[in-house]
Amino acid sequence: MYKTDEELEATARGFLRKLGLEHQVRPDMMTIISKLKHLDRSFKYRRARDAEMPDAEAQWSSNDTEIRMRESVFAAMQRGEARARMTVSHELSHYLLKHEGQLNRSQVKSAAEVSVRRIVNQESEARRLAPRILAPEHLVPEGASIEDIMTSFGLSHEAAAIRKDEIEGIRRRRRGEKRPLPQSIIDFLKEAKRRGHAVRTDLGDDDQ
Image 1 (cartoon, rainbow, N blue to C red):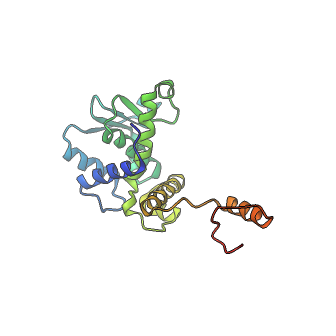
Image 2: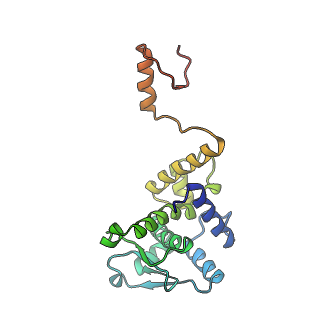
Image 3: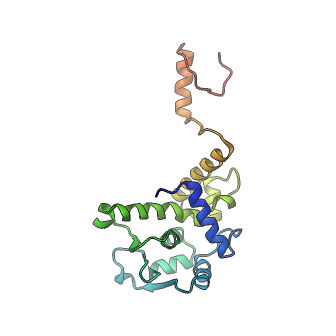
């Protein structure tokens, strides 16, 4: 069943609350893993030589309740590198969402991931939840820039830009506001209006 942005925000916030990290900006991933292991004794993580995982940076196995990650990913996570943080958060998302099977964040998608609807949906859902664990909406200040989100929460530029757009959308819906039109569309409509065409859209100007 498709989860809304608001539902995923609640899932991420609830998870952080259980770990005692609800109001902590940018906790390191090892702290999250350690606290989760203490909270859920069945949860495990394991480091593997990179050669043992040629097709995946990290992997979640529901049968073993275990996240397995390349040694290089673990080291990068410990250094606080954005990609590694997101990779581990992605696998944690599979755990939180109770996804079944052996799932991974890989650089090249397998044929199974492309063809099996369930796996595709689970990967999509985990991709949406992962950045919410790292940069939950309630901790992102109003008006934060992409660079602010990158610096404060340890995200890549691409992830921070997507996160900014998601958060602005959530806050607009909360306030009952409509999504603003792109400037290119506003300019086009203003020109049409100037030429005498009837334009009913509110362009935020005083032109008659």
